[in-house]
Image 1 (cartoon, helix red, strand yellow):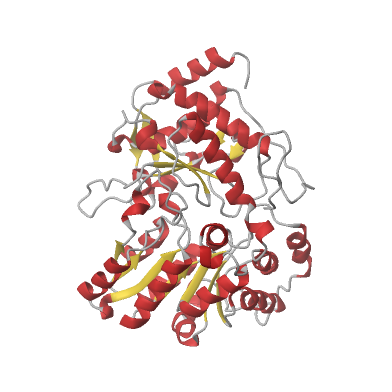
Image 2: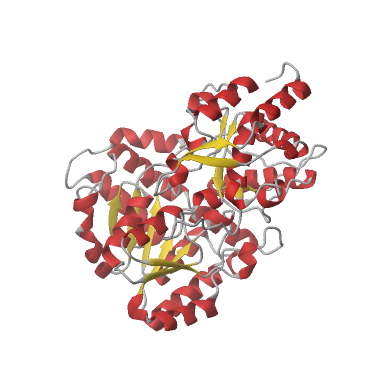
Length: 482
């Protein structure tokens, strides 16, 4: 965002857009919020959107599109094959990444499935800076194993490290040698590590990972779903990127990485997913899985109007004014809460603000899902829907034991160009109140636990009656206020 200094007021992020369409919101009374979260099995995914005031569950598919994106949807070509819409998507990919070989998929996790089907075999490993839930599920489903190689600095909740998503390069070399290059399905870099607070990866580290992969003859893969946030941090935190254009950074990464994939629900603020590469060898190896799992090669399960919006949104993602709004708003919320003493992941990353629940509710053990408990408490206190990113988001070990997360995080995602600053201030205010009453928050236990991706569908119950006590305290402190 443009650097605009305020003369007498506090320094706040200034939006470089205006709002032209609005959607009515509802803020239920606290007693109704208590009822709704319990009916949802204490799983914020199972809340109905009509019962949510601020939906900060995710930034995936809920970002505000630009007027140019909306306008582009009117020219969509819905031909089954040979669609001009797909040609416009390919042109946008070439403009942004410089790559010509493009495979469409209906969203990012579908692209992950294609990658896994093409390259993962039983006994193989996929190496990455940090796993993402669906990525890991696709790999383990096929008999593969995920090995995380994040640098130790990435798991320190609060520090001054600008790039906590960096991969440990020595560990990468040692791990490739340990398993043998032939047993490494691919090395995946997640640009903006979702599960450790949206922390970015430096350009220097990404290029070094690609070089190591090439030296060992192992495929390098870039998950570019959060790349626009990552590029913002490269431009503002990494010296060598200061005078590079955003396009130069995108192109350099595409030149170095063998395969790039992304979710259009994040990168480009539309829908769908893309796999792309300079080398047709890789797209040819994956091509057969597109019609099998997705759709024809010119739409891949995507709706053509969303593809037109993707084409425009991808080009807009080269604009620093466009990509800075999210990180700047996230930074503001993190700083507001940090100044009050709320334990936040610092420095602020992309995607959203992350509360360190191990410190927020240290009295709740891992096996009572502290991050999920905080998520439910925030909804009761505010009507704000966030997402658990801790032990609940992990999957059990093969023997059924719980795999405790390295970090117990509660994520407040910041959909782009959706909320006003007054709404962000409201969110901060209610979390400050909750932090002052954090001793009232208790744990959760499973009522219905699915075997796969349990955080999406599972239902939990409160241990004791702490939620009722929390709602009672809210009413005592806020009176008739919502």
